[in-house]
Amino acid sequence: MRQPKSSEPKHLTASQAAALLQVSPKTVSRWAKEGKLPFVRTLGGHRRYPDSEIRALVDSLSEQPTSESGSGAKPA
Image 1 (cartoon, rainbow, N blue to C red):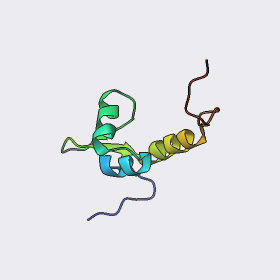
Image 2: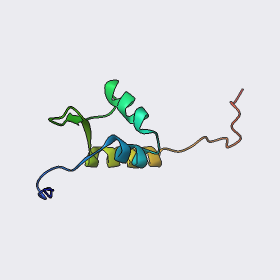
Image 3: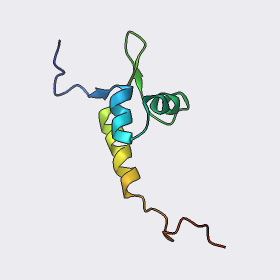
C-alpha cells in the first residue's frame, strides 16, 4: 500500500469522520449529500473527507457554549 506524501492532503473515510464528529457514518454521508460537509470522490466512487476541515469543524463545535440555563428548560 502506498504511503501518502506529506504534501498530499489527508482524507478520512466516513467511519473515521463519524468517529471524530461522534455521529454515525450514515449521518456523515447524509450531511455530505446535503452539502454540509466537504468531500471528494475516489476513482471507485467513495466519498473521502478532508482531515483538516473535519478536525476544524470538530474544534469549532467543541468551542460553542452549551445551554446557559443548565436546567434544559426553555426560558419563558
